[in-house]
Image 1 (tube, rainbow, N blue to C red):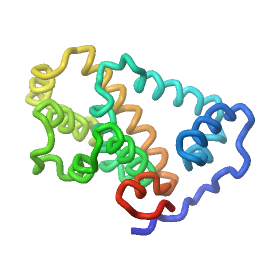
Image 2 (cartoon, rainbow, N blue to C red):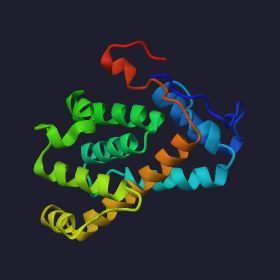
Image 3 (cartoon, rainbow, N blue to C red):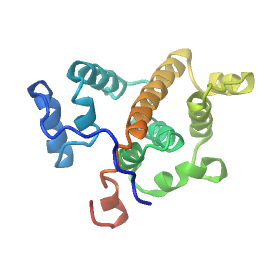
Length: 189
């Protein structure tokens, strides 16, 4: 599938205030991530978004790294964000140690790879990402069986963040970067 061409031109020069983020991206990924070239028009807001995700991805987060990556990948798929699916699939593969879950997320209901806790969290991700959100009483009860109020609150914040990110990128047709291709044996774009 070919990614559509962005209809808002990405920046070729980024504001100097974003240099710390740009250097981190180059160190970790070898290049500047595509969304930075759009968010760069609003450096202050971009820093706030980066701080938000940084808090959610902290070492003492209430959700495991695998659970965070799993939920972010699912929201990315539901929102049809090519870049987010790519970046979050890479994160999920790295954190889970294999491509199995990455390949099963799109059809998670039919897969036996997910724990009961992950299945409830994925159902919650789908419900929160729906427009309008569809979190019914049965799902609320299942969530309470598996997660504390603190974990549910942090999970909801993570899902809200990923919805913001995925919808921003999808609306602007920000393309995939080929980050996960190397894990599938394909050349990186």
